[in-house]
Image (tube, rainbow over all chains, first blue to last red; front, side):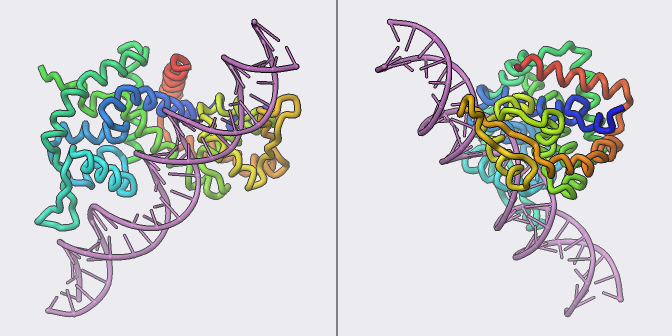
Length: 143
Length: 143
DNA sequence: TTGCAATTGATTGAATACAATTAAATTATC
DNA sequence: GATAATTTAATTGTATTCAATCAATTGCAA
């Protein structure tokens, strides 16, 4: 029995998770570049389309990002005119992010993206549901 | 029926994939930092422990990384003394990466890492197998 | 042989990621 | 009310990640 068996790449669960994540994100680029969005900006906009207005902290929590990532991310979205950033007058520590009209307009162009990318991953309905469930199980435990 | 349903974060498969990947990689840092390795360096060393010697191109293929990532990665591993980088005399375009004694020694210290991290992800054996299978299915299709 | 296409690693530039720290604002405690 | 503890965004520094491009080498075909 090989004591190094557990160190083989093929015996890792994390590695295909890491690699598949990057490959799938890469699949978005052809579509997102037409919208002048990166993947991270895209999922941030998804939150904005749902929430309209949200604190920076809450957005970070939703996306599992910390301030080192979302601070420049939000500045970039603001510079594109998709969101506005304002301090909460009740508590100046809070940064309130609000979607702009241009941000709303972008949703019309983004509406096809999930379908187009979804057709690139060939999992059955059952597999997709099982995968979804296990990924959130992993995320849930790490909260 | 909401025409924007597909744009909701909770309806994405890619997002939990992306987030779970980052969270799991993050779990490695406490253990890997003791070995002075990042996660990417760690999986590169996994390949080296299996192959002893491999071309840069082949290593990139195994890890789904392109030269923009593996060139600085391999230079970093070389600067730590874990691998050596030499041109193939038969074809000077090829870079041959070979593990050093120090690289072998590191394997002894790394042997516990998979067990320690594995105990942080609480999936049943069946779930882990199913997850593994679906992730490689995604990777396989994108080859 | 000569020149062109293909291969391969390196480089560049932009955008993440995240740990660690800092700074500002607020809340709690005495 | 003064001060300590907490919360939050911002900053800094390091390490990816990848698209696009470049440069060197090789192999093949005319």
